[in-house]
Structure formats: C-alpha cells, structure tokens
Length: 163
Image (tube, one colour):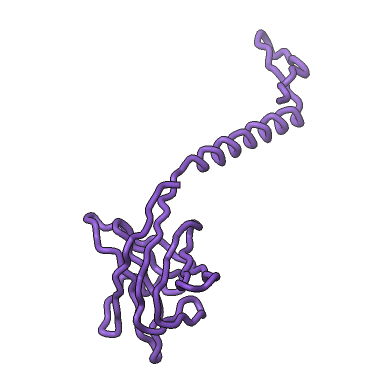
C-alpha cells in the first residue's frame, strides 16, 4: 500500500500546513476502498444457507416458468440460492425455478407446494417450508393470494442441512 508522502510544507504565519499530491491521495483512497470491498466480500462468504430437499407426489400436470411437468413424484431442492430445482423421480434432469422469499411466519408450518389454476392449467406459484414462504418470481405480484382455483400438495422434508 502506498503511503502519503509529504510533498511540501507551506508556511502561513506561525502555522505550517501539509500539502500532499492529489495523485497520492487518490491512490490511497482507491486502495482503502478495495480493501473494504474485499473485507465485505469475505464476510458474506461466511453466511450459512439452509439447504432443504423435499419430496412431493403431485397428482396432476402442472407448469412452472414455461415448463410442463407431468403428474408424478418430484424432488424440490434449494441448493442454489434464489432458485429451486424440480426433479422428477426416474429422470436425470431438473429444471430450475427462480424464487423469492416473501414471508417468515411466526410459527412453524407444514411444508407445501401451492398451485393455482389459470386457463385450465395448474401453475406452481409458492413453496412453503417449515419456517419460510417462497413465491415463484414470475408470480411475485400474486404472493399470498388465496382462491378457489388453488391446490396445495404436502411436501415431505427428505434432507435439511446448513451449507
């Protein structure tokens, strides 16, 4: 790290004022800013994320972010922050769905997936964990809404750990 070097001392009456070159001041400020950014970045890496894998048997065809899913057994996994992957048992692929945390209930709830019927199709709109509620990003404006066209499917927690 460069240190400021006294460039010149100017005398004003009985007081001496120090004078530093502008380039030295700017260089020192940039280095200090970079150090602050590195500290903030490293401190964020220590934050733990709770990874939850849940299983559900969904008895109807549904849609999520433009993808159609047939009725069957599914795994929901939030290992990637800000998304949930949906994996159908017996297949090798999964589809990621963007989600946003929108509520943290005061009491523990039963985990569930919430679907809403629109234009004759069921759409995944929310995933409720034991202590949090997530909404599919595309349906953020509809979060928490209840309707007669809604179906709820219980989720069974298969694995839960802090990463």
